[in-house]
Image: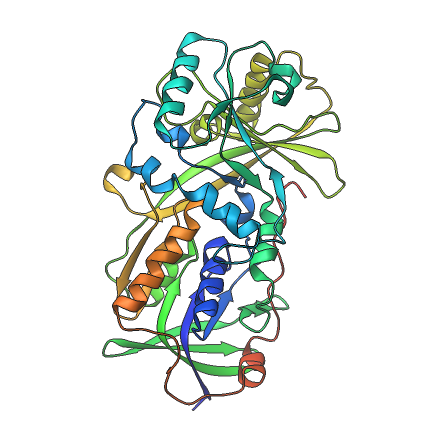
Length: 404
């Protein structure tokens, strides 16, 4: 019989959602470990544009939707954490930009849509001062400064992992992966881990799946029947070039879609060369195009929107991303973070980066509603540095952006 380890919570998935939850649980006194099969942040987290937004793009009809109500308070909540005064300490996280801008475009439709949206969102949306506006946009329509901001996702992941080395474990090393098996007795599960160096039984009061696309496979392994997942794909584009100016911008089209025609954020590659990362409607509709065609569309769009920008001698790449979410009627985008509980397993989806704190709230509330407070894990206890280290000898590496 392999040795056993008992704890309060086991989190699966080391993206921003899982790491944020680890911070909240540890601060509340829960004995928690986090297991990651790949690199920390290696799924949706490192590929996010890093925008912490308050819902303007969901309010472009001049009224709040469910999505805009759910997300309206997120920028201020994240800012408190980044200042070191919030629910978790993110003072080590770097800001890519303290503001995100919204360009109405040069047509009346875009300008009206921006105006209506700005009136529907609480707090902080203003017409940008001329000195704030990127030079290539001046005199070309309305530019709003939003209360949103942009975080550097790589530093965010590192900040969330800081101080938790004894709680975060890699599910594989040296090219091999540990085998996980859930064994169930009544309503309780036990996790069996078989690694190259040994085996271990882990008994937890709750197992929490925060693994994005991996939630589907984990749910099958655990024998769950109720959680249902969906994926909404994107085909993002990166553009690398030494002359690219810093740009953090939503570009609106002339229709009434809640998705901006283009969302641009700026980053730096491993050689400190500027990178534009392009999302929005370009990425959503791009899933129907081959990579070469998607890059042609992106080039044409930038040439149209930014006729004075120098687009020669640039390096262009595509990246396919699947956003993992709870299944919704008709495959529509869920309005808010969501969880599904079945016996001693909680399957969790943040839906988008900005809503990660809301997801942690939902999990914490569910634990308390189920009578799962911190401590009193029960069962036999082993030294973390002993049995855990025997099957989890290494910590996961940190993911890096795909253009690196």
